[in-house]
Amino acid sequence: MGGFPKTQNPKIGDRIAKGSVMARVPLTVETPNSFKLVINAESAGLTPDQFFRLCGDNPDLRLELTARKEIIIMPPFGSESGRRNLKILQQLGSWADTDGTGYAFCTDSGFTLPNGAVRGPDAAWIRHETWEELSREKREKFAPVCPDFVIELRSPSPKFPGNFGLAIQFPNSRRR
Image 1: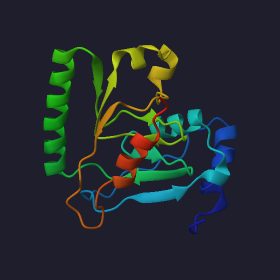
Image 2 (image 1 turned 90 degrees about the vertical axis):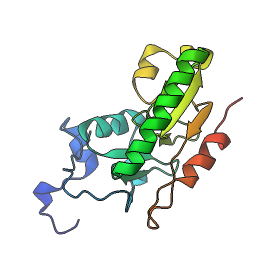
Image 3 (image 1 turned 45 degrees about the vertical axis):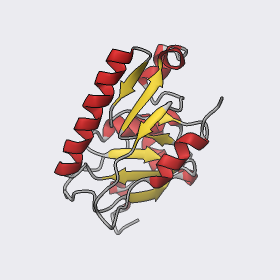
Image 4 (image 1 turned 30 degrees about the horizontal axis):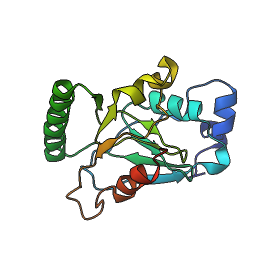
């Protein structure tokens, strides 16, 4: 793969079986939302716990998993998008505190949707009763719940025109 000697690039299954750190990718190139990388991981048989561990082993990366078991690696927000997202999060958090009927979640929160995808919207809100039905263990990982409300910022980059697939996927994943 990619010209690496076999000893430096074992199969993901080999690394998981040996209990070593999952694929750690150093963040060396910084580009504001100019690309996203999609890796097909279906044949690796990645479990939800393994994907959670992969994300934990690579805290500098924004990772999501599609229903087709593709890992999406996204760069951090550009500075202006980050500023706008913070304003959205402040307003949503303040509203959630005042309203008192649910919880607000930030960009770093991942949710396991009914179709198996693990997605992290830029901001989300979930009703109290929906959240409280989940066990503490499920809430500590990528909670198996579709948020009641999500916000996705549109990227100004023509190479990364936004995450419209995510915006469509959340409503279509509702189990009510």
